[in-house]
Length: 509
Image (cartoon, rainbow, N blue to C red; front, side, top):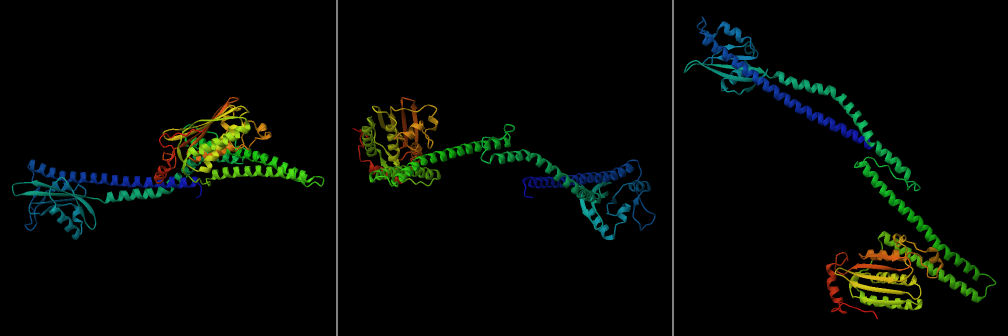
């Protein structure tokens, strides 16, 4: 019983049989109560009939009780009254005021002495009322009704009528027996119906399983599952699986592009290294040529080492194994360093570097990674800005965050390329980037985005082709929500506020 279909069949059958059992017990209880009430009504009716017969005889001038000729025998009912009372079923007993039995039905007369004593004792202690009393004898269990017929101030007749409850006891037993006989047929029928219903219910799931098995070969991720009726649980399942397959297709595509791009990036320096090594080992090469070849090979080794280091950084970031050593960092000194480096690089490239606004702020960050983020954006702007252009850096402080923006007048990025700018190994002009001496690996912006997000911030870009680009980094201030600052750092922050605390301004000259 390992399949869900079999388990559902067993559960449905058990639930059906349990419901049937509860229903049968309820029916037995209701049926038994109905039978008892009917029997009570019959007992009351018999007792009332005896009373009406006695009153009718008295009203018509006929004494229902006659004295016996034998002086030792007590009074008894008349012949006509006895003939009427003999027609009644069950137990009928009539006593006079001295509790002498004037009439006892044949059923009462046939009782054993012990049962007769039990019945008589119960009759004597019964009080006349509309209610009935249950009397348990050895041979029978009866419901007893009591009536009183007043004759005079000190004389009265007592009437007792009783019916057996044996029929009530037999009826539930017969019902239970019937249920036990038909239970096996109901069990087989319920299991069959449940198995068929479960099979029909799981038929769409089987189709989904077949479709997923056909897609999971890795070459059919472009296919999607058919979606059934809207709002159905299986339709939601199909939609969820389609979304997952779409993400897998995107991931597989990115992985294939990543493998191809990484292979391409490594292929070129390896080919150059091989040529340099072969040239240095040539018997005809001079020492000067060998030194030049070795120097070029060393440059390619450095290039590949940088690539491997960038890949390792991103891989560790993806796995969450890259720890950031976060501490309160004053952005003023860091911005001076970034501006100074940018001006040195811009001077060689023939660019104008401006820093018109640098507001001091403090963030909780890894100083090394934060420096890498800012320098990557600055060097990237310098790299793709033609000679004579301009690069502008600003640092503005808000209520809960600080914004660093790098704006250039470079070649810009086409609108169609903007959604892919932070993808790994992606470059807007791949041919020019690889051929240019300034070409990189296409990993710098991906690393910058990871650093910004790891600090609880964001990195965005605005650009137009031929009109330059603006990269904006927004980081939360130390102590603000999302910065990762806890109470233990507040004293550290206060102790580090030692530079331009009045104005909070730092201007880079």
